[in-house]
Image (cartoon, rainbow, N blue to C red; front, top):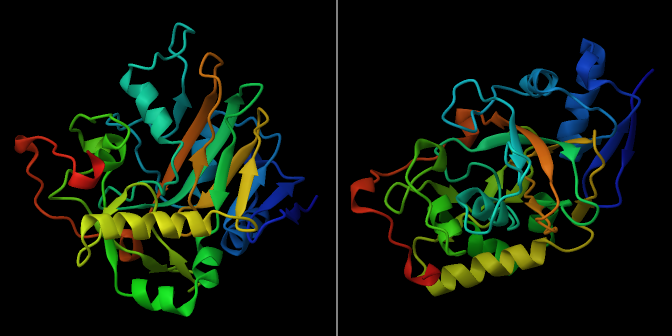
Amino acid sequence: MKPTITPIDATFGATVANIDLANLDDATWKIVEDAFHTYAALVFPDQHLSQEAQVEFSSRFGDIELLRDDPNAKAVPISNQNPDGSVLKPDESRFKSLRGNEGWHIDSTYMPLAAKAGVLSAITVPPEGGETELPDMRAGYDALDEATKTRIAGLSAYHSLYQSQARLGHIVQSGTSYGYHNKGAPLRPLVKTHPVTGRKTLYAGRHAYRIPGLDDAEAEALLEELLEFTCQAPRIYQHKWTPGDLMIWDNRCIMHRARPYDFNQPRIMQATRISGDPASELAATGQDDRASGFEPSATNR
């Protein structure tokens, strides 16, 4: 049976039914790939993929980004639950990382190679909250007035997980999974051209924190203004998870965030992340002086 693709009520996104992601033939995969480029975010209900099946599906889009230092960790849980069944406490680092995910962001922009796409599937979800929201950064750029487009055309921002977590009072320890401190943070343009569709898109999010040529206060105000403008209907979609759902989004033009929920309730998701093409997603980084420790910028203290 041919998959059924139903656009969602937004400027992007579609739900794909009548499909088994664990058993894709080449013709069906081509339909999925074309839909991914057309809609930028796809929801596949009732899949219940194993780790192995999710990795296999994700690998069709490109190489899997390793989300941990473990070279075998291609699909990992995004969970507030410990192995013994207890839930994380507010003073734990993983808890603070999960709370950071509630801010608008693009995956891996704080690393030299940003991600191409994110894949998330639901295993256990809370009765309320815990949704995932996505905004269309292409439509956000299109809707800007010409004066703003001219203002941001040549601007770039540094991206750092250390900076974005510091805003929450969470000082992340150094590690290869967490990108770079101030001196080595990747510098990425505020306006990106999608390497496949050619559409221009805003490229910011919570990891962006400093813009060369602007003072920190002006940069912060501009970044917040762009986010607030973009993340409005009809450019936004909120997905309420049902166990078995799988969603993939194009990291090159779609941001996302998790919504708050009762952290006494377990929320267990399974994540894979597809590495970006170095030709379009690799950003230059400076020499990072980790020995000196992390010093948040003035706007983040």
